[in-house]
Length: 374
Image (cartoon, rainbow, N blue to C red):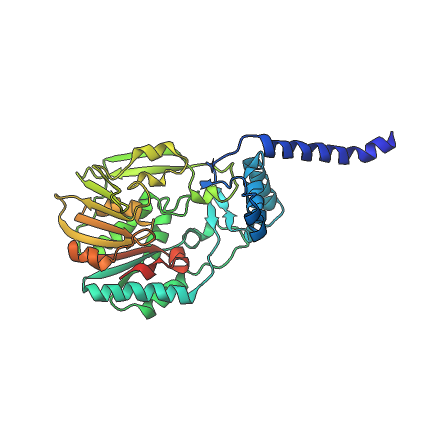
């Protein structure tokens, strides 16, 4: 009897291993992880050439990791086990207070940051337009009170200090205190996503209007639609599947707009709304603003009081632009991650009255697509 008990754990483990292997080999394979919002690795190439090149082993590792049965369950168990064992502050995504999931600080890459700032500044000088720079602070910087006790240092202040040294043609709009003060009045950052909420973007757009000498945004929006069940990209990378979802708010000014989405090679779509409600059916509802990432977006509002503005931007501008469209007859948004035509050519064909560079601090520290700016 004692001998049977001594081998029972080994037998259970071997049975478990055999079942998991059978499910991995013969069970259905997923193409896309809804929770993690990414394409999953498929079966490796078993050809002799791939094996000899060493490609098969890496592909096999990725396939096993992505297609393991019950992957979402095990990812969640690992995340909460890490949290329970006191390693929260060592993770890429912190489990903060009041349900906030916050990206840990990116490494301070001064060389890349300098390159980005000087390229943007040189382009602004070349255009000769009134030009502004908005650097959106990180959630960790704005919501410091939600961070775990042990956490890395955020570099937002260093980024602003270096920008003050490096840029001359661009006017820096310091929005740090505006957003921090706003956080005491309402929710400026999503809990499950790295972007600003609609309220946060309203504060950002109001600050830009004041700096640009334009009309203030309205104080009250008659039509604010609220939708539950928003799980953002931070949630997707965390494994903390039990976190309460965010709400997403659509602040509709009622402006009659024409929105053109252009991804090049004839891929052009036109709409008459700043909001794309199909995305409200998704877990990640942020693309409801301007349909998410596109190389070139043009918003036309003939009844607006202002002229035209060209925005060199990242995804932080999606929601921000819905407020900008209320005050400008034409808003042109260029995303250098996808736009591969010289922006100077675009500006020559479609002149603008103002230039705005809007980037998140994290992206300024990690993104090198400003090299495409010319």
